[in-house]
Amino acid sequence: MSDPAKEQETRLSPEPNERLVAVFDAKDDAEALVVRGLLESQGIEALLTGSEAEKDLWPGGTGGCLIRVREERAEEARRIIAEYRDAPPLEESDITDDSAATG
Image (cartoon, rainbow, N blue to C red):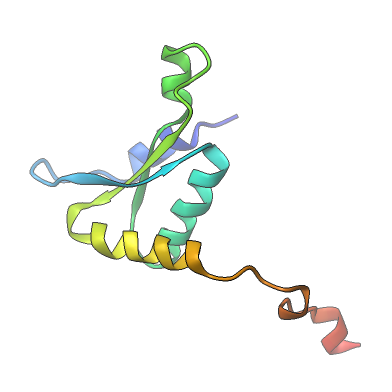
């Protein structure tokens, strides 16, 4: 099984003088992957840190994963995350069923 944090470290390579800042502290890997996907779908590269690496160092892990982005995109990333968290949950009637549309 691949480690999403290690894969991300190779994808997002900051310039030497560029800062990455934490914008979200996820409870677990699944939540971190959802938030990272949300940000990347909006064109913001996101780095997932914590995860398996810390679980190897600390028995039982540290309980979370941090999402980091380039400093200049941090405010935008936090806004996107806040909007997503504040959005009302989808009702079943809001979900489009393609089979009903064709049938």
